[in-house]
Length: 160
Length: 160
DNA sequence: AGAATACCCGAGTAAATTTGTCAACATTGG
DNA sequence: CCAATGTTGACAAATTTACTCGGGTATTCT
Image (cartoon, rainbow over all chains, first blue to last red; front, top):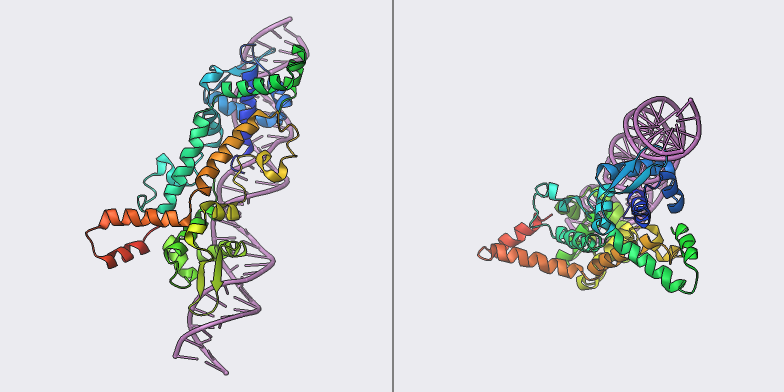
């Protein structure tokens, strides 16, 4: 697996927060249950996201977490890079270590890693939480366009 | 890092074999030294590549390894998938496990993983060992086009 | 034949990472 | 106050990585 559960759980959690954006803080417990993430573990992950400035917390009863920015201003890359670190196929294509690859301009495999890295970033930089929410709405509506609206809400609660 | 040393070492080794393609078997020791790979470890990796039908071996003195197919018929994907397994960002986008994602059509993060997977495959399926060799030759010639040919050979030995 | 060379195979393992768990504490709303 | 919730840091089992090692087998050269 290319991504660890950190990135996978983290994006799910952020998507969940996106769904509830503008409706007050969402408790950790709720995020964990709806997205099927171990609550104690999510605790650690969301702390990382908070320190990175992607979510903010409200302490105390009726507290919880909410997105720090609008869903259209948070990319998938923001979330994944925060939790996973750089998604480089090989260390030699990290900006911080460009000098460590002593024969950088001669290493042919390096150009392969660069192309992979670029293509990954094409995807994750170009996709925001809002895009994910839009996709989600679209799927929901095309599948249940003859059902009641409150049913839609109930279905949303079950999304992975 | 997205790839482990298996994939990274493996592609380097295959590239090295590509450089020597058509000139008889290359001993493991030579591959290991030129590509700076621990010889004992490479032994294991190349065994996997051999079982996958990507290289063949010639035993005995003056033996070694060579590509099973032409460099233009071996893709980067062939090598990486053999050594790393599927390069899926998440297990839910594996063909073998499509049913394990019980809410497959509803899981929005899954569509993100799918897009990443597709973009990675666009790169690795579309690139062969011959492409890498061509790139390598091009770099070599533009940098040393006024030097002797035997110097070129010596430089090749030093490539990572 | 015998030595050198090379591949083959399986066990072991130290270090790092992953994937959590747990407990105590701080803060807030009612 | 007290119940709900976030905050923090320590701990740890399980897995993976990245090898090392040792002995065995096969082939070729001289």
